[in-house]
Length: 150
Image (cartoon, rainbow, N blue to C red; front, side, top):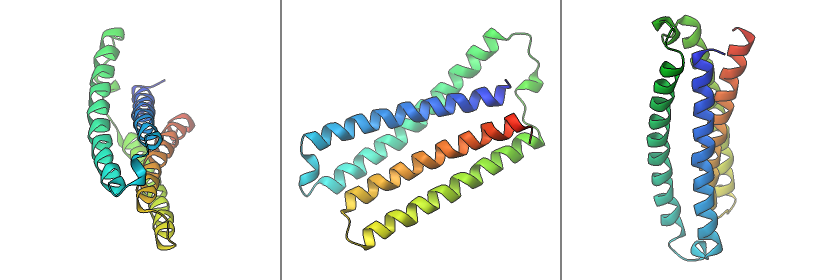
């Protein structure tokens, strides 16, 4: 398994951890009845900022720790393992294209729900869910392309 594939696995794990923590806290808010009042939209907005900021921080820390641990475990690896070539860039581009398409579809579906009278905070949660699903699909596609020798 290449260095790039392992980085994708780390990205998948951190995405699931961040979304799991977000869902845990949002479920606690739901059980406490926080979504019944006027502050529901503000609560979802604030939690979204925390989710995005926390995900970025956790992802950066996880990638740094992974790189350090990988370098310690495999000290004989050359610098070529860490460099990205044209194939890596194409795989990254294909994954990003899938992420954008999946998120766009999710966004249009959420706006459709909003147009037909859905509650605004549920639409925001749907947008967050579509971001998560798009990210997972993109990472899985990248793994697929690496495995297929794209």
